[in-house]
Image (cartoon, rainbow, N blue to C red; front, top):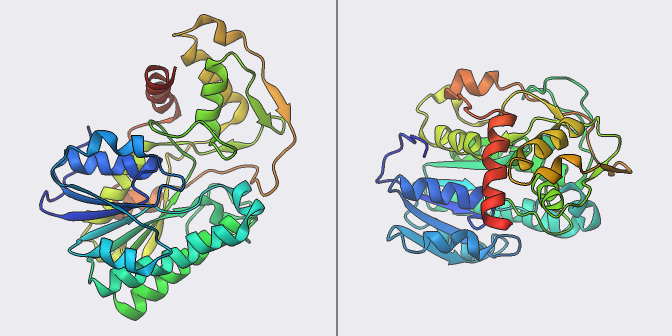
Length: 330
């Protein structure tokens, strides 16, 4: 487990705490002996992600919705820090249903900011997104240079950054946004129409099915293992560097892997458990609307201002993730 270097007396609210990233944050902080409150409506979060945590005396679950301001106020009572993970993810989902994505990601975000302000929470750390870079072709992606959004989801996450900036200036709330780049790891859902590529491909390969790659496999991403993301969230909470506050950071490893390379690595690591997997052929389909061809983060700002030092590259992270999926989902 990570060395969190976080005061054990601090009370942390994690919205979306039953989700993939949220539940990993809950677990890490509870193991650090912090008091943790989870707010989730279970629209996309899973109760089984929280089942091992219910026995912790310092864990509290509030079943509520960030679209309901009363639920947000209730969750913020007595809280020192907020890690706001609650959102409706997925570019395709937002294209299919932009209204609900906006309601959750913008109205819900604003509710949480208001509740945090009213409760005088010390710091509001929130999940931003690499989708904010939009049509920018700059590589690597640097925080102060973005393009135009390519999806409703990207718009909502950019609006979050604008609201956080206004609240920090208007109400003196400390905010930090973390632009996540393709996070993967244990507890990530492999099922459903909007499943992320790594767990989806892992499940297809374990079933001896061909993974379906959108496009020719040349699109690339800065895949980021969950433990790197936990490190960033904790650093954002504990930093006393005033220059590090009220801004956004890329949360990534700083290397990119294309989908053909990714699939090859998954076959290699899964074949250690089932040798037939290495011979499964890929299937190629059309590119998805709103997809950015390439994504690579500069993590210099996070290293300089937060002391970020990611431990897991794509290979070491995939090995951990593949073993977890094999042990838990086979």
